[in-house]
Length: 456
Image (cartoon, rainbow, N blue to C red; front, top):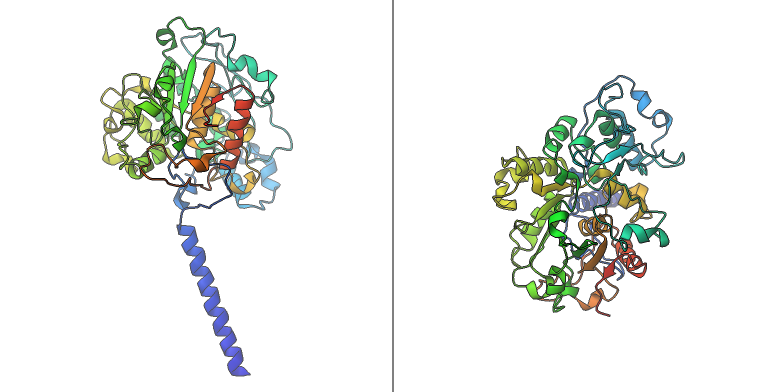
């Protein structure tokens, strides 16, 4: 009996050690899964966050009036990892409410050359979980066109009218950086806020985005319009549905062409076109694309006189690379420090060609358009895919939007990317709710807000 008991204890010990080993091994691997066919993020390379990416850089702390930041959090029991991280972010945010800089609710009127007018934010719902943050700054920007068939004129007649905020700031620029805004946005990690970046770095970085081009996505519309009343934008994903589509000329005929990540055009012009006016990326997805799609001919972002580079900031490295590109200096740290930014963006890169998405806009897209069911459990790692942000930014910017290379219900008929030389099944990743994204494209298409390219 004693021998049997010892054997049982040994077996339990070995099983426990094996479980610990498997758990540690899984934590080191990227998050991925296979799910039933409905959606793919074919326009984006694997950019799943590592464990190191999930941490937040500690904000400058102060012990003055800490309880005033969020008294409810002080007594609230953090029952989930998300709630604990949120509480830490709010407690660590500096109390800068006594600063003389303009407040979040300032109603300061600016003329058209200075920038949009900032209006007060609407208060959040009392029952809103702290990690959601469904409250946003408003930038009142006069429409650039008088298009009578613009999306902004039609959206209220569709099911999306209640979700759509016409005055949400899409881009962040120098005048958005105030102590009050930092205190508000440092609550949110990753691309949804400023918790990953120190205030000084934020100031120094966004100070270079100080011109009209910094807050206007279509900054050259007056020159490009050619007397057209409506701005027409093509948003091009990298999906295999574009292979042999012969849509290249149609895509290039638009005023603006948005592309993302592994946007290979050389050799594929007949199907995907050759022009790129707006290239959306994060530093992470750009580097992953250069590694993953080198064989297909992707060497880096497209470079041309008309190309603008729109950063989707996931980490402080995005802010540092953006400043380095604007000043044509080396990035002080991170994987990009080994290369001069002109090697990525060309010798003519300048602040006028650089833009950066506003955290409010990304959080708004998550909360209003692409909010997963299990948001509280995954909010720190989840965000809309880079291609989804790009398409929805065009929806909020352009008068008319055509989408190519995005997932459709018959996606199994096509390879993952249009540049694949052999058939590759579509990949699915855990940091985007891909099923939700495909459903949204279908809904927007049927509502008449976008024209989605489909073979069927």
